[in-house]
Amino acid sequence: MKKLSLRILSFTVVATALIGFQSCSEDGMPGEGEAITETELQTILTTDEIGGVADFAIAELYNGNTTAKNASTAKDDCYSATYTDSGFDATFNNCVLNGTDNVNGTVNVTYETGEGNASFTATFTDFYVGTIKLNGTRTYQITANSTETTGSFTVTSNMSIELEDGYTITEMGTKTLTISFDQNAESTLFTLTGTWTVEADENTYAVEILDGLQGNSTCQNITSGTMVVSKNGLAVTVDFGNGDCDDVATIIYPNGATEEITL
Image 1 (spheres, one colour):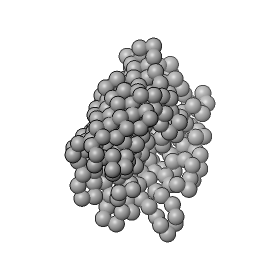
Image 2 (spheres, one colour):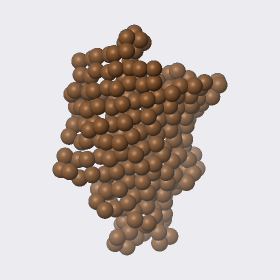
Image 3 (cartoon, one colour):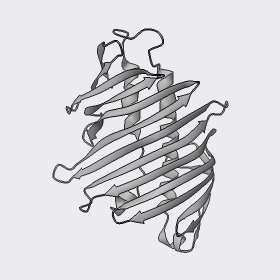
């Protein structure tokens, strides 16, 4: 469990799922005002992308060497952290994490550990990734079974993203990634579930996974499951199939029309 619990995972699989909308043709499209545009989908993905950088920053600190933690402080070329029994406070100064833009700002993390699980609550205060500012909280829950072959990672967000021009996006909701390690097949299986809401430019976008999105480490795309993306109450359903490793999904529009797309 330790290797899993020390690894903060990002939900880039959601980006793969949503970006598939960009491949739609105009056949069967709903009327004006019912469509979700490419720009709007990119807006939905922005919070997940920036949040993933924030997750990585926490992982870097949580994975800090034991000596530094026992000494209660740690310092790198671009950050300083103070540890306590219940968490840590950290300040970043032009850190480049996992190839991102420079990261600056402060984060307070409190955590609890138990048998087979760990939880974190991170509070970000003017936390910058490049020129994008993040404020708010993300709570992480990590759980593994007794055999350490299955684990789950849940993120609950209540945060705001402010772009350089002052444009603000908010995200609230929960996403859970369940991972199973199949040693015989030498592959990793995953299932993504969750419900979350993004607000931007006076529009509300609700994302709900109806049947868990499933995939594995041997296939580039999601292999099964369904999800709904709604804009101000207008819903589009995406069906990812029956488990075959392909790049095809089916969009179901509010008017009942269906269309296959390539992911």
